[in-house]
Amino acid sequence: MASHRILLLLLTSVLLLETSASPSPCAFPAIFNFGDSNSDTGGLSAAFGPAPPPHGETFFGAPAGRYCDGRLIIDFIAQGLGLPFLNAYLDSVATNFSHGANFATAGSTIQRQNTTLFQTGYSPFSLDVQSWQYAQFKSRSQIAYKKGVFKDELPPEDYFSKALYTFDIGQNDLTSGYVSNMTTDEVKATIPDILNKFTVVIKGVYGQGGRFFWIHNTGPFGCLPYVLDRYPIRAPEVDHVGCGAPFNDVAQLFNAKLKETVAQLRKDLPQAVFTYVDVYTIKYSLISQAKKHSFEHPLVACCGHGGKYNYNIHWGCGSKVIVNGTEVLVGKACRDPLKRICWDGVHYTEAANKWVYDQIVEGAFSDPPVPLRMACQRQNQ
Ligand SMILES: *[C@@H]1O[C@H](CO)[C@@H](O)[C@H](O)[C@H]1NC(C)=O
Ligand SMILES: *[C@@H]1O[C@H](CO)[C@@H](O)[C@H](O)[C@H]1NC(C)=O
Ligand SMILES: *[C@@H]1O[C@H](CO)[C@@H](O)[C@H](O)[C@H]1NC(C)=O
Ligand SMILES: *[C@@H]1O[C@H](CO)[C@@H](O)[C@H](O)[C@H]1NC(C)=O
Image: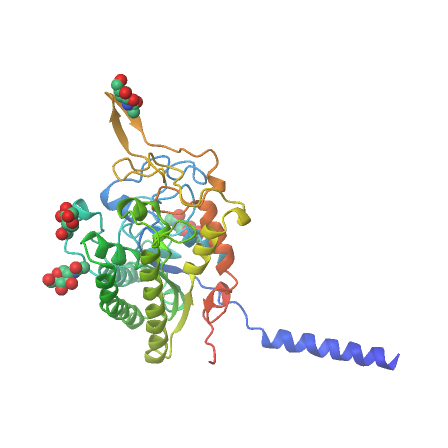
């Protein structure tokens, strides 16, 4: 009896200890997102015309400004935090920014490009421009909010310091090096400059009041059809999965340096909290072990046309081409996008995005390893 009681006491105190030690979730009231097509929820569509059908088909039932059949990782993040989907800052119709805004556009880079979208496909809204848009959004929304107008669609001032600031950008900086005919070594040599620009933007957002940063590293773009199709490579540069090893080496070098950059930012900005999220490892394991995770044909686009990867730059997903005098829509070639990883040769499917989100939400691939809902908590390390 006595021993039972002791055990009960012990259990109770352990439970008490756990409750008092486990911190409460952050209750982020808003998300401000910066990035490229991996997290564009309508920016490029607003500026340059809508992403056509069949984008959006799986989840939204119609194009929704995303280069995907459904939701992106940023959508799952918003839902996971109990917040509405983010509207694009550039969108001027039926938007609601009460819980954040999205500055990402497809084709965005960290470094400014010296070419136009029409020449190389890179967005004019590079990360520095996105940070100006954020500053403009913050100041103008507060002027309006304080006047009492648009209160139902703008965030109150305190949301800016309580919000989660999310970043997913860098892949296009690396591919743009290849587009301008750099060798892999030359692309690698551009990484320090790219990350210096990244640091400048993070410090700028911090200067505007941002405190909680959630930063995705860049994915294995050497496994994406648009890279494999444009830059055919031969063994031994093709890995056992069929991905281009030199491209993935570049991505991994970028990620190692990004991780160092984030570590330095923690030192420079001790009031801020940074979570570095290794989406590379998750995406690569999904692609390399597709079967195990119930996916098929990891290197083949679902929506597209032609060749080994069902991808042709001139026959992009949703484009209309004239074949023998008849207009044909380049649509879905796969039966079940829920079984596919690659949507259009450049972007992941909703099913793959959900899978990645499920891996990152509890912090298993984060440095420090904190769950999304705890990403405001400073770690002592
Ligand atoms: C654009 O041109 C400037 C000036 O020549 C150069 O410093 C910069 O690196 C170029 N940017 C890119 C992305 O090539
Ligand atoms: C914007 O969204 C918030 C949260 O979902 C909601 O409370 C508010 O009414 C919306 N504003 C408008 C103008 O619909
Ligand atoms: C890269 O090389 C290709 C093939 O030689 C050429 O057509 C293209 O103009 C070059 N691009 C640049 C930016 O120099
Ligand atoms: C276009 O017509 C030619 C000649 O009839 C035919 O050989 C070819 O397969 C057609 N192309 C397509 C894509 O249907």
